[in-house]
Image (spheres, rainbow, N blue to C red):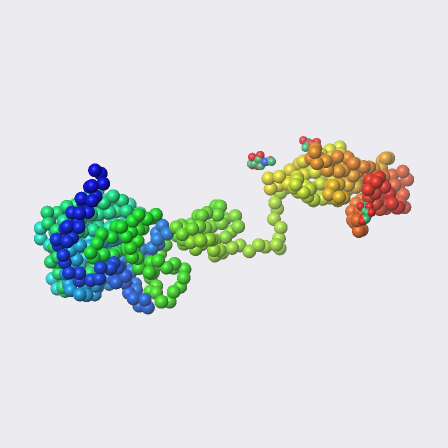
Length: 467
Ligand SMILES: *[C@@H]1O[C@H](CO)[C@@H](O)[C@H](O)[C@H]1NC(C)=O
Ligand SMILES: *[C@@H]1O[C@H](CO)[C@@H](O)[C@H](O)[C@H]1NC(C)=O
Ligand SMILES: *[C@@H]1O[C@H](CO)[C@@H](O)[C@H](O)[C@H]1NC(C)=O
């Protein structure tokens, strides 16, 4: 039973269509009224017409232009004869900010040139859409109620007239239908009249919003050609090419309109950049850069140059006594470390670890007046050797080894040194060497002492080679 209703309606519509034939004065193809009104490629556009990009789509703001600037003679599209079609659809995509109560604005009108009287017009007001004609009787004014359009969003209207029926579809939703007692007549002559886009000609009611699409489709209901679609507010039958190309492409063939986009600037982390964000700016305060979204990716407009000719104070680190040396090294899988050689034996020296973008104290190590640290690796093992200068027996310096399990440096080996000033580690082929710079023997304060080179012995783990 349910399936019968649409069939019945279709049958009624079909019989209405058949019973009421009219001669088509145009091809039964979409007539893109907006494109007809705009200048041809290569011609200058009316300067008062502004192209505006909003939420990723462009429309024209016509308020600044005199009504005649966007008008054309009806004979330009009614080429075979002058009768306005008895069956037609009007498709409009608009974006309208709040309208004042009790005002209405024309999306377009057809006006007699000599008398200036209105032949046909499509108007919107706060919550209504009106089709106004010069025809006497039921078709003189058709009003669809409760159609709120002025919410600053893109909306696509399809108003179709067929026989006794008129239907309005907004954003591919359910159609609002009105039935009149008689069919829309085929006696509406457009002879000597003009189309005005975004105005009622000499009539008041300039369209204040953005107009993206305005199409007259003679002979049929346009909504099946547009709907369903993923973006019903921007459903498209025919949109002027100039509103589709990207403004970043400088195309000499097309008129260049004064262009405006809702340029929003986002700070902080890298925002999204896709088609709806086209023209958006991103201020990267961390790297001091400014980028524009080209619809696909961020393109850098400005970027701070990296300067390497100066140093900035980054972190103050308080050590427990005078620090003679720091050694910075990394342990794979652990990160970056710093060993500080401190003078006082009491608190000793310390190892710091890079954590949360700064060096933090990691491990205290007891040293005897440390002078220097040296980090070295042998077969992936990490070692640290300290140069101690204590002037008392036994005179020792210590090698520490990183313990992977405890994640600490543990004492590994002690070597006799004499007021050691520094250590150096190096390799010759696959042999590892350590060399210490001795200064003075504690026993007799003799400076006449040797420095020593040690060679790593894989069997005995390090023994003096010569001195
Ligand atoms: C790093 O800093 C954050 C916040 O300042 C803190 O919550 C976190 O515990 C710190 N991590 C370490 C390893 O100290
Ligand atoms: C290292 O020694 C200092 C001073 O003696 C003490 O405040 C600190 O807690 C110690 N830190 C560690 C990680 O042992
Ligand atoms: C160096 O390599 C040779 C052969 O390539 C090997 O016999 C020797 O044990 C290696 N020495 C060390 C210290 O690894």
